Length: 221
Image (cartoon, rainbow, N blue to C red; front, side, top):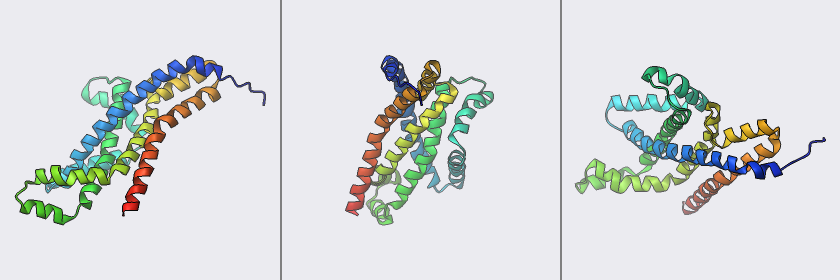
């Protein structure tokens, strides 16, 4: 093997990778926040008394959970504009696809958390005259957020990793910049290894937090 390693190139191109890192954050954080907020709405629809709302939310959730994320990204960029008559930018299409995918998984996390709350708490609160919305807001959801925090953290990790798929739409995030630089300078080992390290630094804190929370909750159990 006569490959001559040249990590000095990484130092020279690191600012470009950092610009991609910023785009990754701009894609990751909003899609996670929007997805979890929409997931709560979907979970409440799944648990409603309306058969129409339950059925509609179930179809939505299964549609996004049972199709590949890559297909969803490509569909929103190439196919969705045909329906709405407006061409989305690569970033908008990627953000939309990731947010909607996250909402489907978030809905199941919320639903599982809500259903884990003892029925007696619901009945006791209603016996005190609290409305259904107040029971959710003041009693149930605070417990759900605490109980399901490890699951939410795991979802955040998954969304961060999925954001790299946006490179197929030419979104100038970290993976896109890494692929571009590695092909430009013919240094895939140095550049892509650095990209992997940056992703690790980004994602590992959330992974560590999730493991810590799971251990603590298991200990309390």
